[in-house]
Length: 91
Image (tube, rainbow, N blue to C red; front, side, top):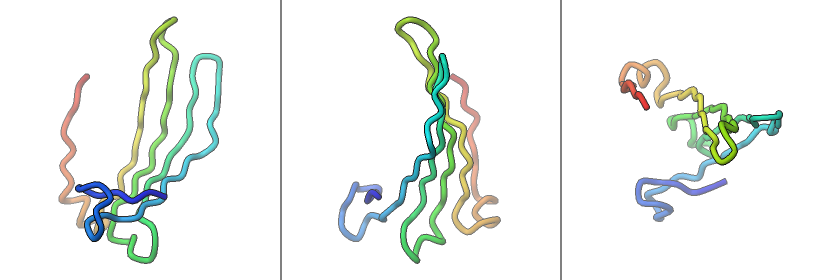
């Protein structure tokens, strides 16, 4: 559990969240696992939920790549999804 908000853990300006991690699967050149981030308590329903798969892979002797695939469930369900704008990102 952690307290998060735009102003950090400021009283009245933050929300208690639960962060859960799945078991880590370790392979020869990479490791992967899952994470869920959601608001805690009975007031959590209107807050977004984030599920993510995380992979860390070896790309050289002194290099690695971190990849994150996520599913974001916006607040207010279908209504919130209609308001969500996802920018295209290229790296």
